[in-house]
Length: 384
Image 1 (cartoon, rainbow, N blue to C red):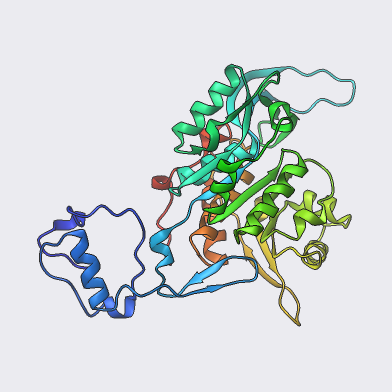
Image 2: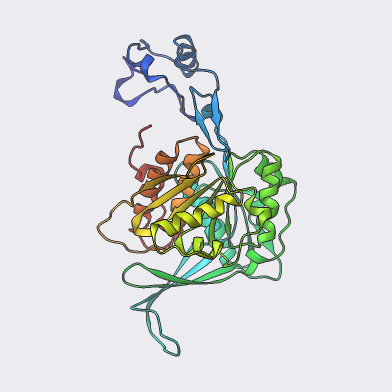
């Protein structure tokens, strides 16, 4: 829209809180002249058919494509259910061999946990995000609560305190290449879970629910079933516990996102070649998963989707190259959360994967997990 009299800075009288879907073929030939308020902008948009009633094409996995869509005017939040950890990062030249002792050059403390990281990532990228998680009654719990709030995350129940249990923690061995190895102590992430009315209300009102595997599998199954009852799609990041996924979780997943190692463990199949990876993803599709989003590290990512009566559809996305990799600790969480943001916003697969790859490329250029996550203003403009 061209607004004479408003200068180059846009509409001074209008606060844009939600996206407006515009038919570009119409907008090229028409402009709205004069100084206007937000209400008159919407009136003109409707008059000239630039704002259309809601029509959306919903896919089997719960995602949708917006077709002149008013659902974009009522964007629903992303709800993340998962772990919150205090991350102790030890910088080492290399990992010790069995029976060997090595020295660390530094020890740093960062907020983390796959659930908390993904909630913070989505919120920093500009999407309303609610987090359901737990911590101990200790300094690390206070530290995590403050970090999430500073990232703009809305804490359902205020980050529940589990009495008599310490906050979860992770011990990360970081090598000069940026590669890491992680040992997790579950703590409050593993005990005392109870999903009540506040949690169900948040899930029922979500555009999607995002899960990981650093909390008990029974909790994930309960959340996935709850989301299914309310027609809310579920995305599961397969990172966390090394164990098979039960059918009660698999059947309720719109998107399952493993890396190659996790994909091999989930299926019991090799993933050393591209064909083996696709065969393993096809196995998950046969178990009822909507789509499989595989994280391939430096090679990017691949989305494998079932096609009725034909071979699975595969969409590939290259990793965005960077000059120096500093720390890969939060990269997978950043990628999954950014994809989930695109999913909730109704973006197509390719656009969501491209956005996620760009976000992860910014994350790996800084130290730490949550503190390295990019904000919306750091991201390049994403075209439709």
